[in-house]
Image (cartoon, rainbow, N blue to C red; front, side):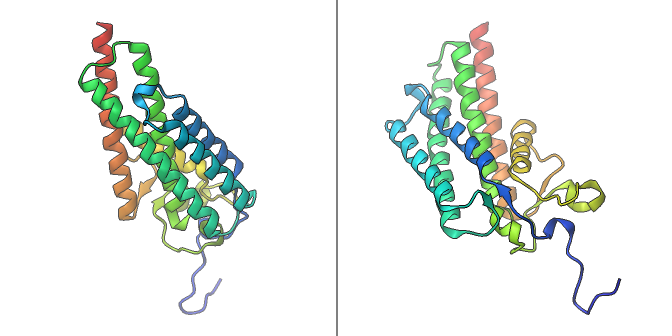
Length: 226
């Protein structure tokens, strides 16, 4: 096969596609909002319930503004989604700071309660970072479906060779959730590598945050049990 000068075949992961369904992401976001809503008062913001209501309204707005499939770069729904992710990030950061403060001062004396609340904040943190990865890589899911940005921010194993990818493969939210889970538990990237500086910075912040939370929670829980 010959190509005109300056023309090259597109990699399989850059081919335009129908986009991914919005419902799985919406269900994950709803779960995060629910976890933030049921956090105990001592780890919540003074206006936590109102924050969760605003988050719920923003989630409904994203669903209403966008189509069932995220097949195009739709600025209103993407901007609303990023506002929602920002609010969830600030809310969970506030809860994490309160948790660390209570751990340092020994205010939590029940190991089961500590593991539940600490685990809830940690899991929420994983989902929030996965949303940032998913919504920023190559301009977001709609932009990826339209192939609006050439250079990827994350390199998945399936990108290196088409024989490792299923027909029509493209990264979806589940792939970014996997990145977030492995980065939060291994404190480093595994098989999917960050390429851009913002991706590297975000993964550094997540690793350090996760290391601090997990270390303090486990240390305090062991201390309580003994």
